[in-house]
Length: 393
Image 1: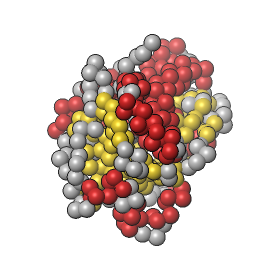
Image 2: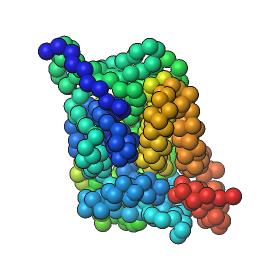
Image 3: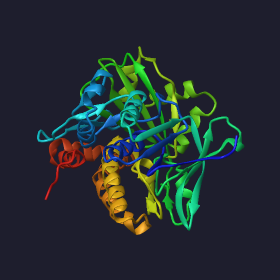
Image 4: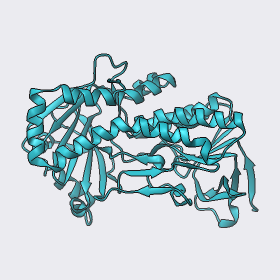
C-alpha cells in the first residue's frame, strides 16, 4: 500500500487525559480533530489516580462526573502525611472548595475521556497507531506520520494540520524538536504502582508516607482496596531489578507505619513502573505546535496533581488554538500566552510538591515540621487551599 495523506484542523498525538480533554474542548468549538494513540483503550497506566478539586471541576464542566461515579470514583477531602516514625499531620481542602478530590482508576478515566471526545462529530480517534515522525513544511511543524502497530514501513500514513499538539507524555517525541529545552531533576525518581485489596485503616484522605529514599502514596478505591504508588530514588529501585513482585512487597514493608496494614492484603492489578519522573519544558510550543499534559512539563507526582493540571491546561490550550485560527497565525509567538498561563497554573502544585519532598528528604527537619504543623495547621491548610484552587492575598 502506498502512503496516504489526510488533513485536519488539529492533530493530537496522545489520547490520554490531556489529549482527550483538549480534543473535546476543540471539538465543542467545531474544529476537525484527529487523536492518534499507539495504545488501545481501556488500558492501565502507572499513576497516583487522584484528582485535585480543580481537576474535578473541569470534569464537571465536561459533563463526565455521573459516568465516573458509575465507574466507582471515590471522593477524598485532604492529604495526611506520615514520617518514618509514624508521626502524622493532616490537612483538608477548604469548605469553600466547590468540589472534593476524586480517586478514579486510569483504566476507566482515560477510556471515558476518549469516548467523550470521540462522541463529537468533528473528532476522529485512531487507536493502535504509532507516530513515527513529525512532519515539517516551510520550517514549521505541519503534522505527523504514523502507521498501525506492526505494519510495514511502506504502510505509513501522513496526517496534516495547521496545528499539531503533543500529548504523548513525559518522554514526548516533540522534546527532540529544535528549540525545545527539557530539564530533568538532578535526583531521578521512579514510580511503581499496583492495586491492593485487604488494606486496613483506609479513610477519606490520600495518605503519603515518607522515607529519605522515597514515598508511599495511598489512595483508597473502596472500603478495603487502594492504589499504592511508590515514588523512589534510583538506588531504591534495585530490589525490582530481578523480581518485580518480590521487590514490590519488600519495599512496601520498608514503610513501618504501613507494613502492618497490609498483613492480609493481595495484589489485584498488574505492577506497573515508569520514570524518570518530573521535568521542566520550555518553551512548550513552537511554529505549528504546542504541548499539553506531561509533554509540557511535569511536577513531581508526590502531590497527585498531574491530571488536574492536564485538565485545566487543556481548556487553555483549546482557547489558544481557537484564537490562532481566528488570526490565521500558527507561529511560535502566538502560543506564548498559553505557555505562561500553564506555568502559572502549575505554580501552586510545585509549591506543594516542594514542601512534601522537603519532608521526605530531610527526615529530622521533616519530623520537626510535622510537629509544628500539628500546633499551627494554618500553613498546611493554605498550601492545600492553593492546590484546591483557592486564591490568597
